[in-house]
Image 1 (cartoon, rainbow, N blue to C red):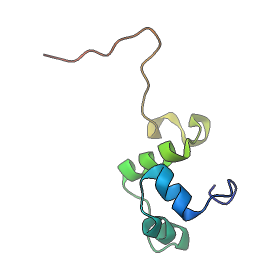
Image 2 (image 1 turned 180 degrees about the vertical axis):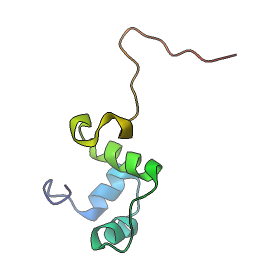
Image 3 (image 1 turned 30 degrees about the vertical axis):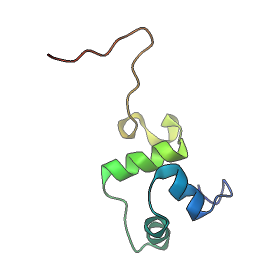
Length: 72
């Protein structure tokens, strides 16, 4: 996806908040992306469409006209 978008690892690091070193290890296979929080950060940073990632890996947005309620 990075190469398709003609982005450098440094660009992805800025977009996602993940370190360039971590991204390099991911691409080389030295590290695996197993932490769901990091996966979500990466998907959000890349603005990956829900139809590719699936709704389970994306934060849910409030429906238009609805309000979020908290317990007090």
